[in-house]
Structures are given as structure tokens and as C-alpha cells.
Image 1 (cartoon, rainbow, N blue to C red):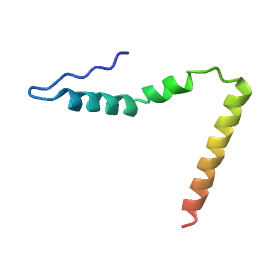
Image 2: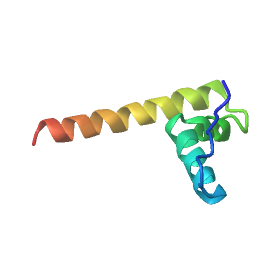
Image 3: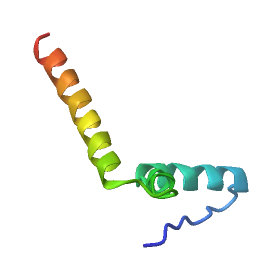
Image 4: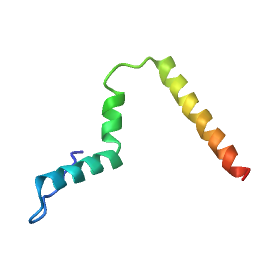
Length: 66
């Protein structure tokens, strides 16, 4: 699925590029490309997911108690 932006009338290229970058960030395309740049072992994938899950649950507990 290609990402496109249409340049508006009178819009500078800098602004158009900025809009493109924001769109890519919102759709997590850059994040995915960086993550897939190198091979990650299955055990490392599981470890990373566990770490994210633990952090999320810690935050959830912290803000439930407030």
C-alpha cells in the first residue's frame, strides 16, 4: 500500500516532505522498516515482547492506584 500526498497549491516542497514524514510516522512504516532491517532471532522477539508487556502492565498498575 503506497503512501501518497498531494502537493497543495502554493505549498513548498519542505512542507510537503514534512507532511509525508508525519504520515509515515502515524502509519508506523518507518518503525517497521527499522525493525526489519536486521534479522531478529525468535527468542529475541519473544524477549522484547515480554519486556514491552511488563512495562505496560507496570504503567497500568501505577495509574490504577492513583
